Amino acid sequence: MSVTNKFKKQILCIGAGYVGGPTMAMIAAKCPDYKVTVVDINAARIDAWNTDHLPIFEPGLLEVVKISRGRNLFFSTDVDAAIRDADIIFVSVNTPTKTFGEGAGRAADLQYWEKTARNIVKCSGSDKIIIEKSTLPVRTAAAMERILNANDKGIHFEVLSNPEFLAEGTAIADLENPDRVLIGSQMNESGLRACQEVVDIYAHWIPRERILTSNVWSSELSKLVANAFLAQRISSINSISALCEKTEADVKEVSRAIGKDCRIGSRFLNASVGFGGSCFKKDILNLVYICECYGLTDVARYWESVVLMNDYQKRRFVQNMLRVMFNTIAGKRIALFGFAFKADTGDTRESPAIDIARQLIEERAHVVISDPEALENAAHDLGECGSSSVEYVGDPYKAVAGAHAIAIMTEWKLYMELDYKKIFDSMEKPAFIFDGRNILDHQKLYDLGFNVFPLGTTPLKHF
Ligand code: UDX
Ligand code: UDX
Image (cartoon, helix red, strand yellow):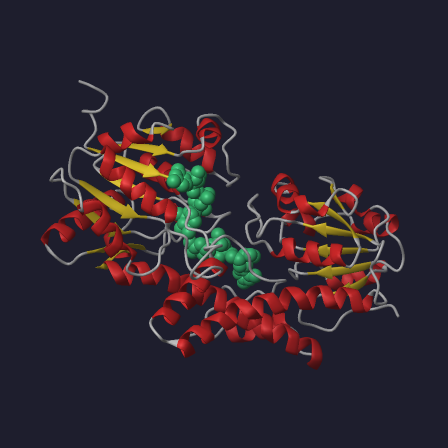
């Protein structure tokens, strides 16, 4: 029996990034009866997926990959052959915000998606199910369906939407035990049949009641709306953090008090220096653009304010640093603890630390960046800033030596466990600490001699 025939179906994923890689690794681990191939045009990425040094840092991912790599999980650059052999194709290529032309800065750039769709048509010799895994504007499936089915080979492509809700840093737990899986299809016979095929995959390990099905448009839109709602909670609490700083209220106490209301819920109420990540901003701007296209200007403005509040929070953080450090930070060494957009990832896409670092550098500060996983990405993000104004130092103790201030950018556990007495002793005085994630013991730091500036509460100052 050939390798191909011993499997029930062949699944392909195009795009071996943060979404495609972990999702397919989980499907392969849970569904040994399916052959899962992941392809990417980036050969270096594929090479890395075939080693123990995976191209992305995600806790627990290597263990899951190792369960099935070489058994029913394969990483390859041979996109065309993989398309030809596949029954079910997940498309997980990136859909960044458009940087040019109509809708620049807001609309999704669908060029990679469309090129992929055209390549699928070119390489296919049989009917296939095509699944949108990338986040896409609502009604993209209609366009894709037209491109795919405008072929003269008599092949039928059924386009489904199956957005991914995993969060980085917890991807494995999210994939293993998701709150829900969502599959959108056309409500006709072939759509529902295709939908059932995808339900069958997830039903290998996910209780059936958590696998939701809907029409394609609801599914596409739900992904954008889920991210918009999550980001909106962060912007809401961040707006309140500014008010708390003026009123002697404490944003942590406010979060706890409102979060106990089960209609509100306690998660995603941590005030921060701002949300980051590849999805929130992009998806909200995309939602804004779609609303504008349909003439829903008020709805567009409502959601846009979530992004504007996030920008305000980042700006406010630096303005506060500048103000309390005697209105000048020129020439001062400032250590940023963390550069990743959240803990437990090396990903820095849209990280608030990028804007904070740039603003500090604009004020002529000497910025020293420390992060356990993201220094390489940080150097890439700040490439234009030049080595005279920014340094990358893995060891946090070395990063702070001689610094005037520390700013916590990422909630890495390691920053909660450092010896702050030792750190204080090695810093310039007065020593400042700005906790952009509210993770440190502020009273203890104050007792050590620091001037402490948490978010959303009264600062602890020695002067
Ligand atoms: C993907 C998600 O699927 C989507 O929801 C989100 O909107 C952004 O893109 P992610 O996996 O984090 O998220 O993106 P990325 O890590 O950039 O991975 C995309 C991969 O697709 C890259 O490795 C890229 O090389 C690959 N790609 C892109 C192709 O293989 N072919 C292309 O034509 C374009
Ligand atoms: C998000 C969604 O959670 C996920 O469902 C979707 O598939 C992709 O986008 P991700 O961006 O990976 O996931 O991480 P998430 O945990 O949502 O954090 C996003 C940003 O919000 C991070 O910068 C994080 O630090 C910040 N955040 C989160 C806060 O500032 N406060 C909070 O209370 C929670």
